[in-house]
Image 1 (cartoon, rainbow, N blue to C red):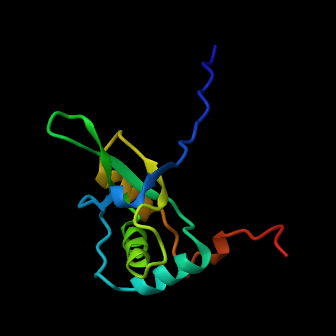
Image 2: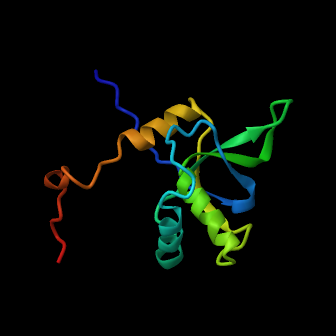
Length: 133
């Protein structure tokens, strides 16, 4: 008799104050500072944050979770949010939705988030816009 396959349960974002987030060295995407950052900050200012950040807890020397988190993916979004703080458009402790992971490796999270991203050009035929007016 076949064993029933367990249903997938998706994690829910956790709200973390912006001032508790810091960029992780495990983020595999390397972007020069300032490159398109102002445009991204402007877009977040206009439309809000459209994608959650990916974060992992930072542990102290004893292995206990602190109240701080490394952002393993979404580093440009984090930098854009910090730019909005400098512009006085966002509170330094603004609540930020983050997908918090503790299993696996931080580099794998970052790589997977970037690797599976579709570029806009050359992939339009793969997209379906059924039901849109």
